[in-house]
Length: 319
Image (tube, rainbow, N blue to C red; front, top):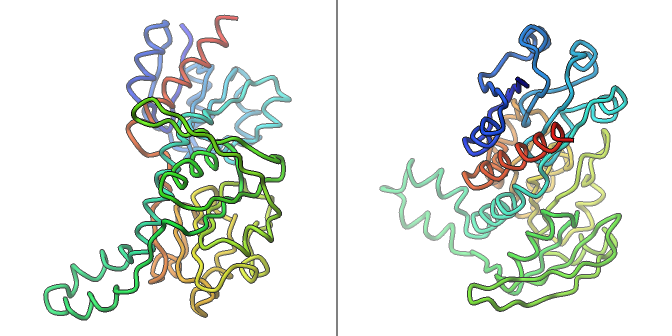
């Protein structure tokens, strides 16, 4: 029987699909420093992770029986992918499963930003009973999203899903991508109708300069931030920025400086430089909408991730 360790968990749909094919799957999390010993002693051939567990060269070298490393989600920067593949290990992720959930989180942050919900939800429990009128006045300058320009940096699966939702809200969508020149975005409506839109990508500087809001959907580029002080300087004064992709894509120091100087009005972050211990200055900033890396954390996405992992594992062993 082939044994699988889902060290960061897996949905019941994934467990059921794997067990129906005769796999043995364990979901109890093993501490990182005990992982190699557990994999070897229990003869696991498949290791499934999300973002919590890291799979580096030392672990790969220590576990010669591993045949598959599966990442539930999109980003694989917690796995030494190239090295694992050189060692003959199959490595895959589930890029399509969580796109809609991540895109919806973008708009959860966006709506919260433009109507100051991120701050109101902090202040109302503290002083809403005594300072109701003052708080109402302080949040009086909200902004509508309809008619505003959303700049999408990174026009892959998630970026395109964000574009669909933005178009549905009546936003003007522009995009930048190193590899994509143009894309046709098709919206499917509840009555079966379809409507397609062609989006031609633009230079990063143009997207930053034209956008009321910028949302980032790119991988981390080594140790260099994609958006630093220079890029923020190209943005509109009073614009907003969102990062639900990877920590380090935005220079957090430059971001806080821009917010403090009111170059930017607000930011929405789901990912951070130093996870799982983000900067207290980021966490306490009154112009940042915050979530703890929950882009794919919906029941629907987790079910799709589990099913997609199960399908890829089954296909591998059915060869």
